[in-house]
Amino acid sequence: MLTDLADVLRSAGLTVVERPGWRSRGHGPMSGVRCVVLHHTAGPATGEAPSLGVVENGRPDLAGPLAQLVLGRSGTWYVVAAGLCYHTGATFEPWQGNTWAVGIEAEATGRDPWPPVQYAGYVRGARALADHYGVPYSRVLGHREIARPLGRKSDPNFDLATFRAALTSQENTMTTPAGLWTAPIRNFNGDVVAAQQILVGTEARVADVQRQLAAARAEIATLTAKVEGISPGPVTVTNPPVDLRALAATVADVLAERLRG
Ligand SMILES: [Zn+2]
Image (cartoon, rainbow, N blue to C red; front, side):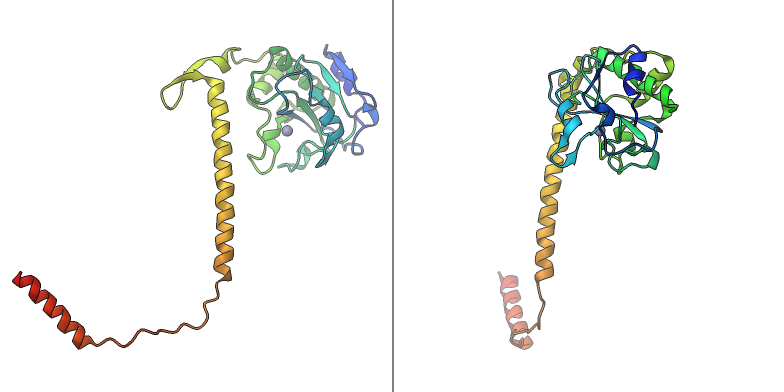
């Protein structure tokens, strides 16, 4: 059990809240730590850590704990579990999976800008964990980088190469300008909008396309079932025999009429 999690983060100068029972919480012990996996909760738009309860106790379809750690919007770390947690799903490599990966769920919608204090805390905490467990910074990975198949997950929504570069450089601040999301840029129609509007619009369109795809798949399934249900049976041709002479005579009459006219 990773019963040193709270001390590791506190030693890095971070504010830590230890959840009751965290030292014995988990789906059994982990095999070790070979990876740190970064997530965002895609939770409510406001509040310090409204997803904490879900991470600790789970969802109807997945038993908690869902990550060892939750990072609140204030930059405070909540230590939820010392044991194995269900946060990775299927991964490309065994060492990226739940038995080897410490999971961090940062409270964020995935659309709104990250509070600088939270992002800085994310970098500082991830660095402390990697250093303590001997995990190379190249193995501090975003959920979207390890989730198989590729594209199954989109979290976290910040640039991960930048995040890892910050681990190395000892910089804790986000290197993208704070005003990035609200900066005016031109969209495909030539209208001036904020960057985050384009992101939200794109997500809405992706959702639309996914709905259309699902509808098309359902239609194809229905048609396929119908086609498979059709039994050809014996085919009977009931056309009467054609009198070619009579047909030729009629055509000749029509042509003659046209030519005269
Ligand atoms: Zn995730």
